[in-house]
Image (cartoon, rainbow, N blue to C red; front, top):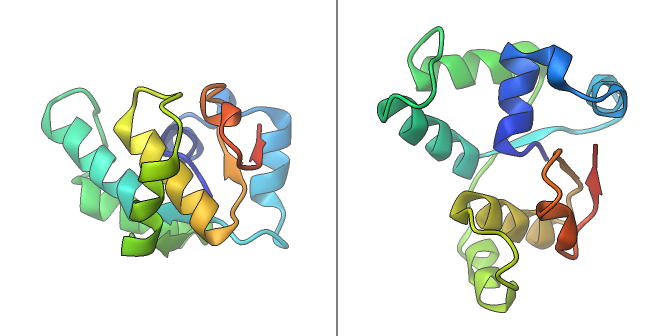
Length: 125
């Protein structure tokens, strides 16, 4: 599963990715997911003017997912309930929700965020 910044770097700034992240993303054996949480975060940042995109967020996200074979990951109630047991390591609520989804679905997260790596999920970068 991509965190939000990983998705944006893949789409807009691929030079920011680590070699390992590039290799893992390019490996066709890996299923790659983008959470609806990340879509929401991208929309909010774009709307506030903190994120410039070449197109409207919905069109940009859909086009990038299709071009790069990234599957959408819906938000489920059971994943969100995991927030109750999650330690407050990370201050970003979007990242905590992504961690909940990674836990719920047993996914590895592709992220450079060292705070996310402190949660009990598999993180690679």
